[in-house]
Amino acid sequence: MSQIFGDRPESGGSGGDPLPHHRGGQTEQLNAPTAEQEASRRIRGASKRVRRRRRTVIFLLVLAVFVTVAFFALQAVRPILSATSAKDYPGPGHGTVTFIVPTGATGRIVAEGLVAQGVAASESAVLDALSAAKGNTLIQPGSFGLKLEMKASDAVSVLLAPDNNKVHYAAIDQNLRQPEVLALLAKSTGIDESTFTALAKTPANFGLPTAAKSLEGYLTPGEYRFPTEMTAEQILAQLVQATKDTLVKDGVTDPADQYRVLTIASIIEFEGNEANYALISGAIENRLHNPNAETGGRLESDATVAYGLGLKTYNITDAQKKDASNPYNTFANPGLPVGPIGSPAAKAINAAAHPQDNPYYFWVTVNLTTGETLYATTYADHLKNVAKYQAWCDANAGKCK
Image (cartoon, rainbow, N blue to C red; front, side):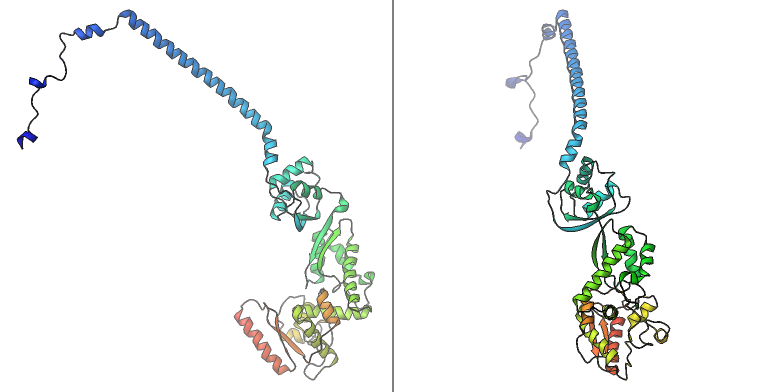
């Protein structure tokens, strides 16, 4: 064990000293440089330092020149790079989009709108196209027919087209009343609403019968694109003519009969959906021409009472139903109300002109979401259906206002 873990033997003997001993500093004297060698070494070192500094200065100067040249070159080509790199559709596009340029719109607003509606791929592409066409100050308000995924320059060319290619776009929904339609037309065309309102007070100027006190019922729903040069009177005349054309198509040509059919059609549209128009029309005819003891020739329509009150509601109170001074109150007054309660669309007009024969005198929509409507021949059965409607209202809070 001691042989393995014993102390290391002292140097000497056959092992010898691993480092030779030098005598008296002879080695130091032999390796010491002379004065001339030391001076030469210092000169060479100084020269190397000078050369390094010189190379560094030259490198920095070259780098500075390169950076400067690159900076100005980039500024020169930036517009080109911007124009060519802006995301754009190849065109020509597909589908149809009505794009409205509001009054006072800037190029940026137009670019944002085109991208939002899926017409252009990027705002920068539109702005570049406007800049190239020098059109930033030439954009005029109006409605324009465009396509989805158009090349920006093509879209801009449409927006900058001569005035005779520009239109005002207006979308008139079903069940809108005359004041709502006139407000929408004013907003779409920029024509003052008071101008439309004043014209609507003289229905005879539009060829309507003396029973008509306004244009209510004749302002056909639909999408319109009015040339920008059209006047308010021309716009209203176009809507009225569209309604007359629909009536004639359904075989109703006499002006007084047209007014009657429009009145029924407007009630049908508020009382049900397209699937129920013809049945409701038949039930209305039963009440008008085959009255029984329970109905007494009264339509008893909540929608007509609400119109006369200037309200939009499904809930009519007993007091409101008893108020005979309301000329649209079909609970207190027999027969039709004094006129239409909205502008019916073509399908409602067709149903009013061609009612479906049936034995019903009562109807009620029991699901306002699906439009499910139930019919009855007696008031007792009708009350059962009304209970179903009330149960639906209780289960769908806030939907039967």
